[in-house]
Length: 116
Length: 114
Image (cartoon, rainbow over all chains, first blue to last red; front, side, top):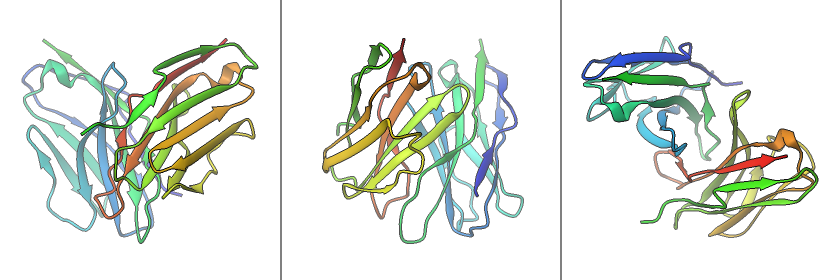
């Protein structure tokens, strides 16, 4: 069974600094997608960034980028120039595919605090 | 475009009562998912539909839970009878076949069973 592990329950960063959130996963599949979702106190789940496993290039969305290491099954999220609005729970998620969609498998989450 | 719509946003009920949660997916999306979020178990899939047909309901905790999708624009999750341990945030999400497999979530329903 696939699993997603986020080993950092909480992280803290100073405003304008850079922070990296870790995620590892376990799968025997070769084709899959990985995601980072953000959940602010409003509890809305917001997609931050996605990575296709077949792409070697790391995904980037403005201040958010990932370090995808397929062999190591690692998928970390880097937030640059942290802002107060980045404070939230961050969830790493996995789904495989191959003709049909399945569910997202989530990690337990990392609570990010941003200090002014 | 409107996102995934869920109602109610909050529900407080007494043990033993029937609870119905509602979801309207994004128009044109083929998949609909129901998740439950608790502090202890995190986010877990309950059931998902493809083209209104239930595909995997292995996450439904017990027979007290049931879900339906009578058409492409509406789904319900029902708990009957409700118990205090059902207290959680319930999310509905939808996605489009052939896309990048990302799911778009509704705002969630916070259920409290007393």
